[in-house]
Image 1 (tube, one colour):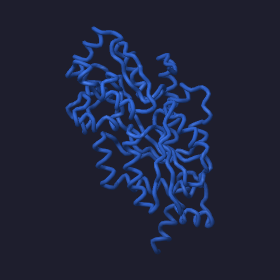
Image 2 (cartoon, rainbow, N blue to C red):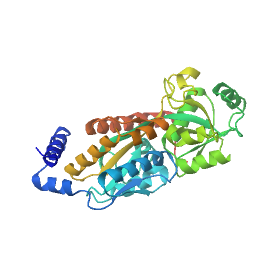
Image 3 (cartoon, rainbow, N blue to C red):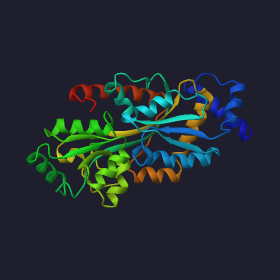
Image 4 (tube, rainbow, N blue to C red):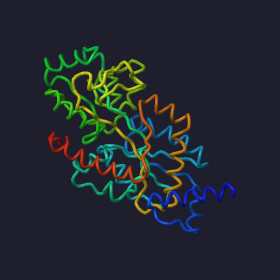
Length: 331
């Protein structure tokens, strides 16, 4: 059997196994012709944030693989919901993708009047990365060299510190609220239009700290511009072995991760979905992305399309409960 026939059979079997329906000869011709032009990917945050840290390396390698440019369209605002709303209304023709994040599982409980539904208006394709949250501070603003010194300072100076986030309802915001609940502290929330602008103000000293995804903070931590005091979860991150985990500093229940996923607008042809998923899965095993993901302390997603869909649903429910308990509201 020649390579083209083998490839056709793989996609047919993959689509059927994924519950995507049958792929006819006519639609196979469409998939085999894809892409005939550049593909657009909406990133719903400004350049320079955590999403960009994974979107741009992915776009570069994806473009090489498919032979057409994967164009990044940064559309920030309202905790990622502006870009998501735009992407939900894009043509479902295989040339429009959306790279969202955990923020989009939080948004339904924070924004009651969203004009899109992350579960109904999008087709989940692939979990791209899973990154632990990290507590980072501006070392000039916060006189602490370790987590215990930080906690002592916060408790002696209630309401003195503030933290930046990518916007109200983002994982940065909710990670901060969860931290305050579990430590009995108060730190003022300052929302931005994305993690990139928030990080720049953290580096510049306009805000004191962040509960950031390790992917966007990694380079700045290594350069000494900001200081990492703790990573969330039960174990240290291999990329930053000297930074203690939450369990080590007495917060065993503080587990927050920033995950990033790839979606397509509802109605995108099943055969093209299968082709995109196959390309992304292949890239995840290549040295270029493996190196980038490891440097950012991230795991490459290994879920099937159905597992990713179920994961998104579970995250929507999980964060709804956290928002309700915290009493967090849009600032």
